[in-house]
Image (cartoon, rainbow, N blue to C red; front, side):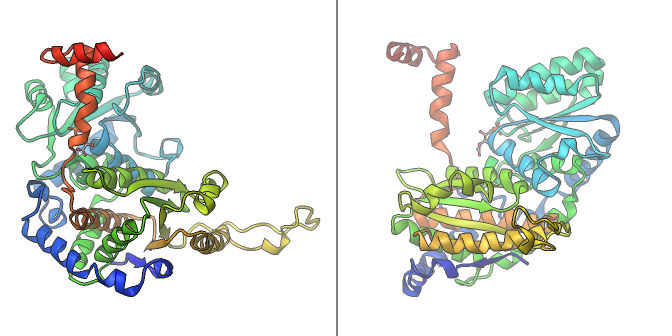
Length: 443
Ligand code: PA5
């Protein structure tokens, strides 16, 4: 594993003894995860997934991706939450946030079904235009309202364009192996299906077909992605506070005890933005319960130093910061020399942008530490599949450890149901009549 964790800029906030005091708690959490004896233990399938994923399905994913690349100029991915963020994050990280605008031999990819905005959905339809397209509808439960209603719209579009049979050959459903409305529909219509395993919750599912099919369609190497995750799985199984997952989980819990209630995930590459969105779901949904949990936030640097920088430096001292540092890019872009030097920038002439960014990173870490924000740095070598696989597994495993250390069930999400019940009641879903009346009285 090439990922490393640097905690030296937490030392002025946390003594060695305070950090070491977490060792037994982490040993317990690791044992609980390993033996599957803790809360939410029915959802530990992600833990050994890089070792024992379904090879036949993996081959089918690659075959489907090739077919889609051959018969579609556009690939529409419909899903929300854990059935959305991981795939988008990986594609933006490995390819680009501007993936659709790049010259390429792979389809444009649009993500939808993650909101109820008619403007946003119509826009995707307009962007497809007359181009050939395929759809991947992803929903573990098969009943989530946003993707389900948006899928109806795209299914109708496909059926009008290609006929019922033609549409069925362009629809890929990723869902439970047996249960749910989507599985029923897929079987009835003859869609190719991929499985979200029973024992893997949405936010831990990026390395299943949920993430792998869209990632493969974008032309990324999913073998290397799984190999990276496997390397992390092997390495992070080792006990001890020099295990980066143990150390990260210990440090953030110890800092929480000191009133650092918000963790900002920062990166200096805009390609990381959706990885931070994925991370926010992973940690927010896993730990934010029972009246506790670190609030996960994120910033894009250096952009947000010009918007959020003031607060980070000087606002309420409740923040800790974790920087994901990506190794040197192969792209070289030096600042040109300018004879006139009217902008006074000749002291940077010949310097590579990466080099300038490195000084921004180093200077910002120290400024934030001086401002009272402890800083952790996770280093990965590159924006490539192996590094991403390591990073994904690292965050997942550390999240399980951290949640158990905090004392919550890191694998459930009871709070997500509250809005759904209200929405169903207000929409008049049968069975919600009493709640509808109670809500109406309050509106
Ligand atoms: O992590 C979770 O469980 C949620 O974010 C789900 O992924 C999200 O609600 C979508 O659920 P489903 O895949 O069942 O449509």
